[in-house]
Amino acid sequence: MSELNEDEIRGLAKAVNIEIQNSDITDISYSLNAMLEAIDSINPEGINAVEPLSVIQKED
Image 1 (cartoon, rainbow, N blue to C red):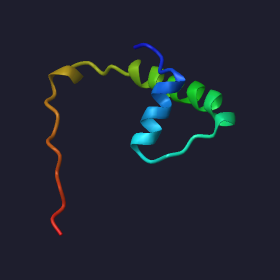
Image 2 (cartoon, rainbow, N blue to C red):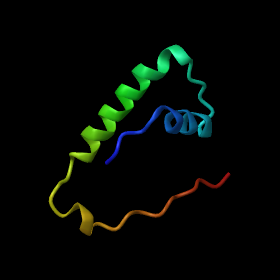
Image 3 (cartoon, helix red, strand yellow):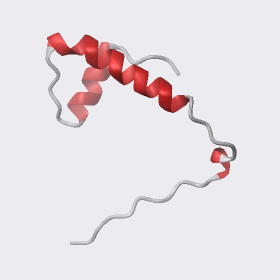
């Protein structure tokens, strides 16, 4: 998996209504890419054979 660049991180933050200060972008970039790398390395045997669950929406 390739690393996310600063523009991609800002785009993701904007999509979830989070404002990132210019002074924080380097730290956030490092942390987010490290987390994604760690998650990518988790590969339990047979995980690809499991079908994803559909989204369950709560009725009001």
